[in-house]
Length: 258
Length: 280
Image 1 (cartoon, each protein chain N blue to C red):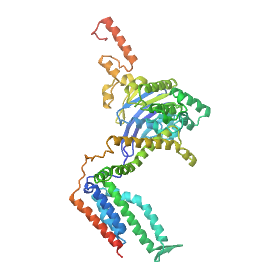
Image 2: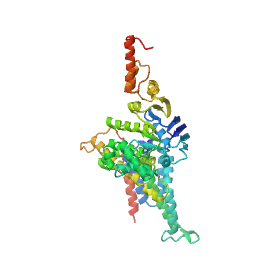
Image 3: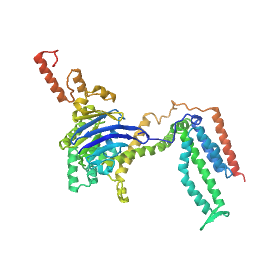
Image 4: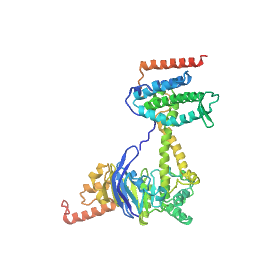
């Protein structure tokens, strides 16, 4: 079975062809602007006018919206209920029922927080949907990110699906030996040991083997490395990144302005 | 206990059709080898026999149980399944405890568990290693521990998933002894294997799979001679069988004994009638 190792969806879109670092810089800039900038509707406008159209340009619109909603709807529901009812210092009562009163300040605060989180999560999601993690890390290492840091990032991204697959195999093997994983809590806890033992041991063996495999390919060699994959970086994108820096400075300025 | 697979289709979530209409009846005490290219559906098929997978269409019946109605841990009373990688199941501190895990799960009385463990350790040649931690053993001995841990469950049906992969000749010999002992006890044995010599020497029936279907099924003397069918799923007849074919033997030979027997007959024939004339 092929396990999906990341969010990445292969499409042929202008967004996919963009340099990964450009996308990373844009994502960070949008988040910083959303958190630093002023205006109640700034983050929601960033989402509606920039991120959502970009996701359709990248041909991942449907997955983008679905995943974003799935991830954030429960959080938003909780946020609105809590803040609109219990925001400290709320005075303007919109409507009340029983012992509760919904206050305007709380709703505003919840809206701003929710849309900021929305920008944060969705801009990273868009980056991950349209960028192969390997290409992103390769580009960053070519720009001077230490290879060991890239390895740590890549392995943390990949370890969860790998361990899931391994855990599923172990679970199958032990159930085949009559292990009952259903029933009372005590029984389930007792059923954990036969699963955790092989999982932990096997994962340690895997890590060691992977370390040997990459070392055999000169991982720690200090010479400059060439790469088979060439990642495009057009002058226009460089300009875009400077533009991002400018947007960040403007947002910071507006934040610090009295 | 009879195994009955009726027109089973199986599709993995994600849309891969791994089985497309497999039907198979395995009588008690049969020794069956399943061969075929990677991705032919062999593992998917045997995972249906102990309920790890449930057919999307069709039925699998073990004795009088429909696998889609019975939980895996209950089916373990009837079907033992040795996974390919022993490290996916070993967790106890000693070999003996590891081997006792299965029979204990099945709820056997302590005396019976003790007796089954002793016997399984003996069959796996592990008696002198009973108190060792499995992870202190070499990979090939860990494989034997995994085998022992399943045969100790005393199920009427035993499945091995590629038991000889990566093992040296001595370990393969040990596995062969174990299979012979299980045969004498009347167990049904199913093996997935790419080791065609192992298949030819230890099993009587061969099921050839390709693209989720059974391409051929029958006694090994018939199946291992079907060069074209086997080639469809990237399996070659054993070297000895091919040699027999090149020598013009009219029967398919699978084992050294069969080869020698046929050769002796032929030589006798030549001696009587002179070289160059055929037997017929």
